Length: 419
Image: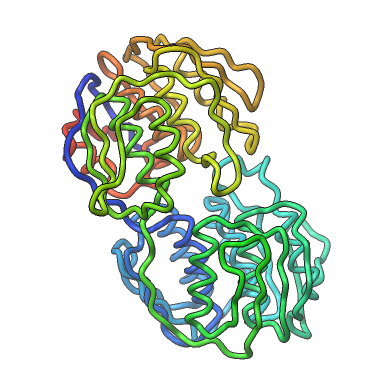
């Protein structure tokens, strides 16, 4: 495993381009299993999670060309197994997205417990309820074993939780199910919309994109297609916060204005000078100010994936900020490590943390990147701190950020990988 060694205190400056949305790439790769034809995905992020999903497809019998590049070609004329590799499944929560395509193609699916961030606290009950509503039967056992020997059937369903991957599981299952499936209380995030657009290109009838009710008219055979992934607004927001934390000036290419505005709205409230101009999101040197409260929510509210980074920014803002992430219980716990760097924090409970700033952060510590997003936030803290900071393991952060070391160095950060 690798450690990122950070010499803090540099003001980052320059231009960075974001690649495709990680949370769109995973369901789109799963959707490629629904057809025997070739599918071509471009602007694919070169990150660890995408490589794991691509190798899961290989293990199932698909042909995948271009792993490690921004263009993936997937062909799945035949699948040889209904049980994805257990070790790979244990590394990726998004592996749950394989259930629908496996049931559609093979009438059976066996999945070990998906891993990834906070695996013990993130249920897949919404996925299972959607699949059983469409005729799948769950068998007893340590793994998730589902069977649909007669094929999946269209259904009308209400999702108890507006789960992103739960909605995507229902969409993937419905694409080849006979009849019209209606999904109510569906997630509305941009990556859900992108999956709907991809399934449309493959020949499924999908309506209601971007709304809480989606209707899918399944077809017996989907066709291959090509698709360019939209830029990752979470990655763009991450670079924007890194720029603001270091008092830097960064131009960010590749994000859609309609998506990055959910991040820009909070940054602007915190007195960060930023905005979109000619398709580039610009962050200017600023003096951050505290806001009374930052609360996460379902799209189009502020995303939970950026709450850790915003907590670090609050340590450099004048005044007191309450950060409230009601969606996940464990995301803020990693931020307690900032106390050892001199941050003024009070963890009220599993969902709320109170930050008082500005405080001068001190390096000299080894920080544990317990999950993908907190890892990036700890790197941001190290960039703003005096002295050296080590963040370990770097591989956790590289699950979601392509060429992280090289891009940090291109912006002027003094960082190095230590094996």
